[in-house]
Image 1 (cartoon, rainbow, N blue to C red):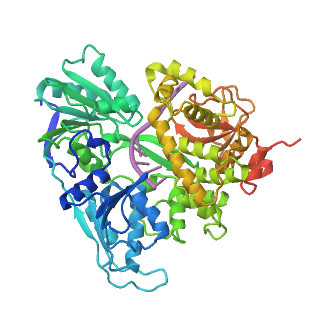
Image 2 (cartoon, rainbow, N blue to C red):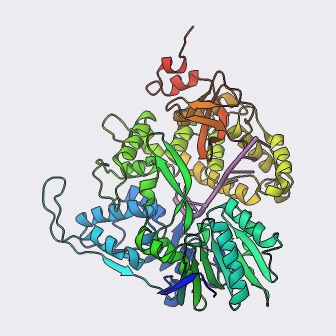
Image 3 (cartoon, chains in turn green, purple):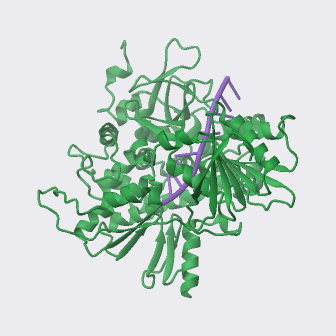
Length: 616
DNA sequence: GAGCACTGC
C-alpha cells in the first residue's frame, strides 16, 4: 500500500475451526466434539459427548471425553465440588479471561490441593501463558488457611497454542488518527484501490460507529467505490442480516464486513484477507460506589489486537492495518487489559462461590483479584436480599434456591418471591425476557412502526407487564413467526424466551416452587419484581418537568429510557432492571410501584423516613 | 424523543 504506514510482521494466532457456513452456526464445542468423535471412529454421545446449556449429548455410562462450557462445569461443581468424575481437565481459551473461566481457574487451583492426582491442562494464547503459569506455580509455596504449608504438587501443563494461521503483515499509521471511523473508511478504500482481491474485516466499537462507516462507504459520492459489498455485523442485528456476512463473495466483488467485537472471537468469517483495527471496543465498567455498570469505548489490549490481526490469516497470508501508531502499540497498549472480573458487578460471582462452599471470598485466590469495594458491595446486596446471613453464609432455603437458578440473583429472588405471591408463571416469563437482548425486531428504518406495535402491547404498569402481554399474544398465535413479523417482534428471540422458560420451570419445580399463574392480577407481579429489584427504586423529583428521577439509595440522577412504555408517563415511583449511560443515565425496563412495598419487602434496607422525607 | 460490546448457566 501507499504511504502513511509502517510495517511489521507477526504470525496469526488462531485455533482450528470449522469451514463451511452451515457449521458456523454450531458452537465450537459442538464442532470440536463431532470432530474428535469422528477421528476416534465412535458415535457422538457415546465415548465422546458434549454438554451446553440446552443440550446434554452424553451418556453417563459410556462417555469418556466430554466437551462442555465453563458455565456448565461450574454448575456441575455445585453437586460435585471436587469434580471427582474427571481425571483430566483441559481449560481451553483460558486467555479470554471470562468471568466463568477466572472463577474456574481459581477453583481448579484449590481442587488440586485436595486432589493431587487430577491432571490439569490450561490452553492459552502465548501472550498470556506466562501469567497463567505463574498463577499455578506451586514452587512458590504458600501458607494454607490453617497455617499448614502445602506439599509439593504437580503444576498443570500450560499449552500455548499458536494455531495454524497464515502470516499476517502488520501496518501502523505514522501519526495518531483523530477520527477512527473516517480513518477506517479511507483505509478500506485504499485497500480496495491498491490490493489484490480478498475480503476486508473492520473492527469498530458499536452500532452507531458501524452505521456511520457504512453510510460513508455507500452514500458519500466522494468515497463510494464500485465492487464493494458493505455489510454490518453486531449481535443485535436480526438473524437474517447476520447471515449475509457468511454468504460467499461473488466473483469480481469484494466484501467489507464492518463489525463489533463479535467477529474477534465469537464468529469466524472465512475469506478475510485484510483487517482494519480501530484499536477500540466497548467494554463494561462497574462502579461499586454508585452500583452502576457502564458500557464505555476503551482502548483494546495487545492480546485483542493480536487476535484481531489473526482474523486476516485464515485462508492465505493477510494484512492488518492498525489505526494507531507502532509507538503506541509498543509503549502504551496494555498487554492483556483489565480482566472482566475487575470490571463487573460481582453479585453473580459471589453467589456462585458461596454455593460452592467458599467462605472466605475476600481471600479467594483469583487469577486477577477484583477490588475489595466491589466484593463488599456484592456481599451487601446479597445480604439485603436475604440470600446471605449475618455470617455471610447462604441462607436456607432462600440462598440455596437462588444459587440453583441460573440467572442474576436479583432475578432469581424475584422468582422466589413470586412463589409467595402466587405468580411464578408470570415471574418466569419476565425472567426469560429479561435474560435476552430484546424481543423487538430492531430496524432503525421502521422506528415508527415499531413504536406503534409496542403500543398494542403496552401496559400502564410498565415494561415487565408489557412483556407478559407479548408472550401471551405469541402463545395465542400458536408461536407463529408470521404473527411476530406483523407485530415487529423478533421470532428467534421469542423461541429463545420459550426455551429459557422451559428450563426455568423445570428448575423451579425441582427447588420447590409451585408453578402458578395469578390470572391477570398485576399487583402481585409488581410486588414480586419489587422483592428482587428493590435496590433499583427511583423517585420522580417533585419539581421535575423533564422526567428527572433519583435513585433512592444513591441519589443518582436517572431518566426513563425513550424505549420504555413508561417514557413520558413518569409515574412517581419506579423500579428499573438496568441502566444505560450516554450523556444521561437511562433506566431500561421500568415498572411502576407503590413505595410502601419497599419497606414491606426490604425493611432492613429502606428506612421509612427515607421514603417520606417530610411525613404529614 | 434516543440508542443497546460479548459470552454464558
